[in-house]
Length: 323
Image 1 (cartoon, rainbow, N blue to C red):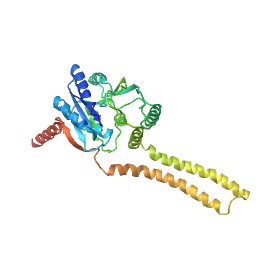
Image 2 (cartoon, rainbow, N blue to C red; image 1 turned 45 degrees about the vertical axis):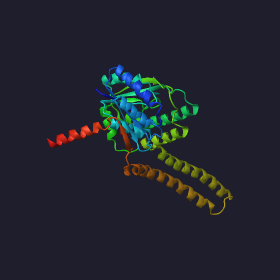
Image 3 (cartoon, rainbow, N blue to C red; image 1 turned 60 degrees about the horizontal axis):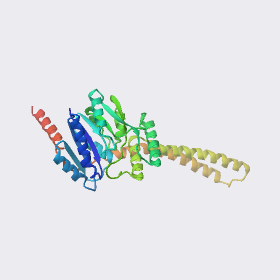
């Protein structure tokens, strides 16, 4: 039984050596056959060079680098695609996800769990604004997918069949955390406390977190488009209020002649146009993103024997065809 650990990394040159050492030592201590798959998400520092160095020191370490920054979601799915394990753990490269939880996840998987969710007991040291915005985002997402995501994270273990299901999804814009809930399967939970980073600083600014939240919300739900429809409904409601006001002025003889009909027509038609655009935009936006068919990511370099799995699969298929 092989355990793959996928570790997305962006400008994490200081964390790579320590993360590789800590995880390798922990897994060997627990007699777990493993591989570490690092994905450098277009890092601008020496992250990939550190991955290459770690792969040279430990044959169980492999990795890849994107041609540019494609985002954490792309890095996660690239890691899932390159992982060869019977079970795959996704976790942060900075070890804010505590490594000692991984053996516990492994035991639950060996006991029959197909998805093991890491649930945050606390979010660590965060600003009040970040906590409030994160709480609001997860409340909205929980309502949309009908599951509690308030304490969820990307830290989780997936059985190979779950990984294959996620990789088979044709959509380009993905939200890994929500898709793992959507896929279903037998689920267990482990709790953990978010740790402080040992090296470097978080690469997530308030603006990038907001952009990440908006991107994930639009990729998994139609809520932003539905807000346009809500705006149309508000516009119609506003037009009704103005209708009453304008009609009262008309009856009292204080309205400008001809103004009543024109303003009411503009408001009512504008309201219905907003509603129509909301409905049409709902379909056009989804079609537009998917019909382009661009890949989620582009890999420019690899480290270790990360390509051997695919080569062996191709050889196996050729042998079967020949028979």
